[in-house]
Image (cartoon, rainbow, N blue to C red; front, side, top):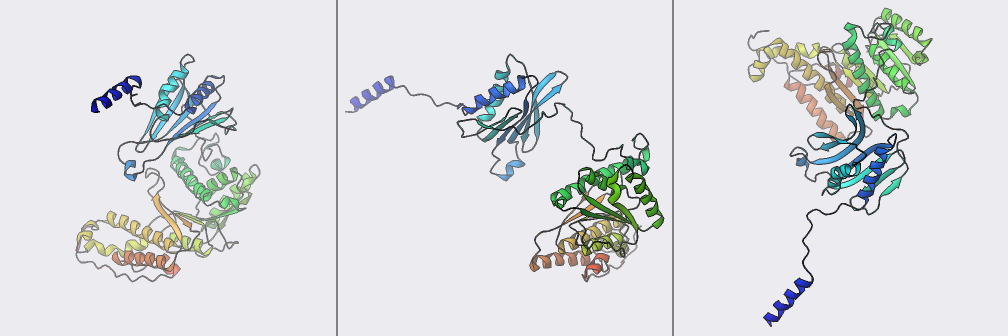
Length: 456
């Protein structure tokens, strides 16, 4: 019986030989059709190709994002460089980006594209591929058997320049820059004004993104108040940018020096003759703590380089006007600086660090701005503290941004933040803090006593 079974098995194998398993499975059927359309869009004159996007499923393990490079997506764009036109592929991995330029030759476009793209479609993590041209959008998923066609997303060809020139947020030829003395009549920045222009540009970038994220441009108009505005460089820059984007804006700069306000308002009057967007920009004299705004609601409150406790006054003023966004770039921190003097003779490790004046200066800055940030959190804001521009432009380069949360904090959450505020103050000998007084928080810290003499 056993011999008979073996004989039957041998006959079966000879008639129906076992096929080896393929180690390279064929890509999904739509891939070949998509590559043909890609080749046609690149070879047409002019090319109708706009964009190619290949996406993979992200790694399930979050640790993969910091481990070995894992391919997340590939973006393709048409570029023209010295050696000729190329299909530029940007491989976006978990830990890096890689770029590869594919030669475009009419004779072997299909072969070249296939050899570079088919392995991506066969990848185990492959998710979707989308080709966008002026004629239409084409896409397929990993499990698709057909190529899906949609109306074209692009109405015109994107730039084929290898080095795309960015449009500046602030045009150096803007008349207001010349009127403020930052540029000459040709729009060339004056040597001593380059750092100021860099600050203005970065400031506009940050604040405009905050405004966009909160969708306050849906409100017409948006109200902006810049307290302690000085000569109004930043006030002018932000107002000019927002109005250039057709965002109806009312901006008010508040400055202590009445003569300076008169001078700046004169510049506004001159500009309005040719640039009517400045009709809604005005400068008014007054102290931050006592200035009364005509409106009970301000969308954006700004205070850049307000000295010492003036930044606290500005925060309090923004809170009283229920500001959606508060932006600060604090200046000196004298109030806390005086209170940490005792650390220069403090017995302990921290005393050794605080024995030098420059260290106490920086320490005062960290404690002051941390307390401001925590108090804003306690009052229902989402807070970030960061360096908004390089120290080569200004040493006063820390920025605090606060966005009012749509959902109020629970009492339990508020109590936790309050505890952090009190512990930070008490642990660093801060018994008096202007912003805490203005919002009704009573500090219980103990003054640090000078135990021994150390160098200043």
